[in-house]
Image 1: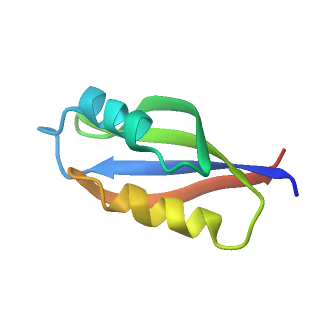
Image 2: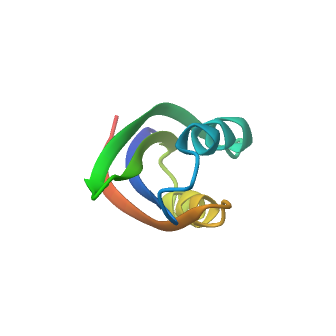
Length: 88
């Protein structure tokens, strides 16, 4: 079984959300089956930023859906989208 890299676009609920705290929460509470590769803040519109989160998972069915649901369930997160996915 190989590994897959998935890039998620994590959009906060608003400009009042502390993105540094959200980044820390992602890094500290990441599920065991996932490995955080990179997090970057990127501009969305009118001062609103989003997080681009790259996570490495084992290549198994449904793994990306579990991580997407976990990210969406974090406090302060409005929306999560898969931007890119590829085998390593």
